[in-house]
Image (cartoon, rainbow, N blue to C red; front, side, top):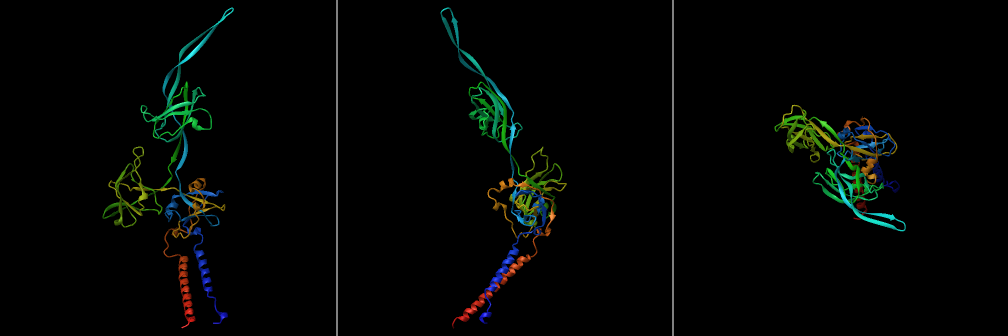
Length: 458
């Protein structure tokens, strides 16, 4: 072939690279709302950092244990950076007024030296009589008993802030502090604590801190020579922790029979794991005693015993404590069986407790935004908010404005929740291109090998 008509051997490589790159970009394109099963509109807000609570139906429809098959889109269909976090427990600062009583009233006997002088003046002389005597002085001092658990609830107080009057007011008040659960068995925790009723910004001058928990009483006894001590108010400062909210999904198990006997059976309703499970009798004031079995196989012969002789009930909380729920974090089953050794006229119920999840996302001001969820293929990932923000994500979660999620609408349809019967066309095309690229590369290597052999001498 003439030199002017020889093809550039690099052209097939370049064309193939361009084709592969374009198809790879198509396969890795940003997700769209139609890639997900369902969608819902998020209420509009101008804040950049927003958050909303995930409904139970979103958790049950997820195809990923970490709820990663959801995305937040702006009005133009662009995915927004987001993260899924568990709603934490709430810690609030509380103040309670504590009752107190005069525990003891006593008179402290003291003595004082008093000097008197008398003068007599006559015609040309003045006389003076000085008399010195010791007299008794009485001072009244009160001990006070503070009730730390007036409502029978024990608290861990950060500090007790006091209001009182004492004389002389300019003198520092020093008290001994005792605590305990019985009046005749109080123990001293601070033999001397200095207090002053000065209205300064430092509350430590009017407060008692480092108080041991689980004590019913606290006694204050003046230890220095103040002539009067009248307690007026005691405020207990503490932190109250409210348990993290949970979502409960209730289902009715199916009664099945096999060679091993009768069992109540249900399939786990979601890939997201519940934290707890309670088995609730269908009849009021009833008790279930039985054995619990779990398995990841639907074949009954492969089930394994998880707990023997469990007890669950629906008795009133006023009569006994609620039945202990099962901790599901150690089981992770796909199928659950349980038997009942007691007669159950009505089918029992199963209550699964899920943690409450929130989605925190960073908006771009281009709303309204939409949440889309349920994608079994899960081919693409959107940016994680935790990787973009510096610091603790829980801190940003608290700063994010709480918005609401609208009603559920269909996006790509419920078939997105199921595994696809065949590979997507993009993956097929990528595999085909990889095979073609391997064949083209092999052919070029073979031609180069032949040209090198032809050019070399015999």
